[in-house]
Length: 114
Image (cartoon, rainbow, N blue to C red; front, side):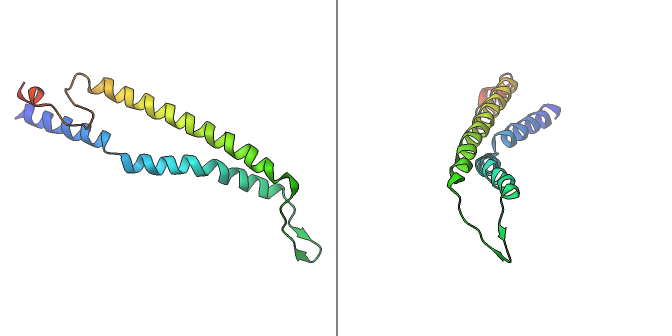
């Protein structure tokens, strides 16, 4: 009975560990858009929008600085996220090495019969 419970618990844990593709997609979207949004917010604090009695918003000749900051920052964040994700996958693979779980989190038949 205990072996059955332990097997089921390990199978569920392994499956839930690898069944996170939707969360990874959300994380990737956040990683891609958050640096640009942050830079835009910071730049907007430094911009002067009001002139006289009305509001006059214009694109300046230095608008390229936004992209010069956003693109490298976004790429840096993506690289850091990718490296972290790969290290996490390696850590999980090492943890699963002795359990007989494959990449999808299922337990092989030979391990179940032991």
